[in-house]
Length: 200
Image (cartoon, rainbow, N blue to C red):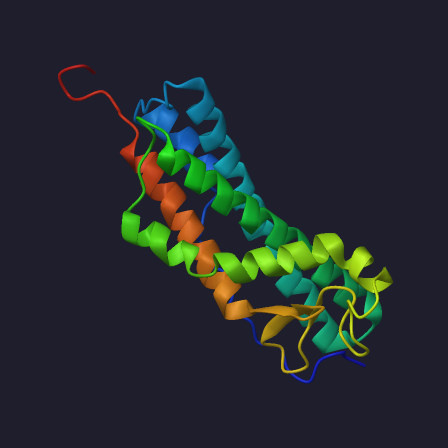
């Protein structure tokens, strides 16, 4: 039997390419130059890879839980929530990297409004990530985890939210944040300098 009454998550477009692939094509085909500052370059490369990981893990989470809805069995459900857990960790890391990149001088730029839309869900992403990291302490503390609260990341019965302890985040919010992180990465790649027609 399936462990949810309903699960119809927003799905990431299969045409959504990897940021790392986008960046590498820009280097090869357009002569784009990576950030000159070594620290910024490392942060930027890490951002691209971490966002790609968040996308991959979100997709795998959806695939496994949809499999659970079709065929039942605990394995695909547990594996699916495990992928969502990794996704949340990656999203939080990508948000932190984006903030550090934006603060650095002469860094690739992403639209301020886009960065603002990403930060809307920062508190909920952080709360769920922190709950995942510290749930063992909550289990052992007196009154830290009330009876009936999930002690592992799980999905609400209606399939709309990821939950752990007293914290939750809508799947729709996680989806929108990932899409915005990808858009920010694409914008930064496009902002990298490339030789003009007179320098080619």
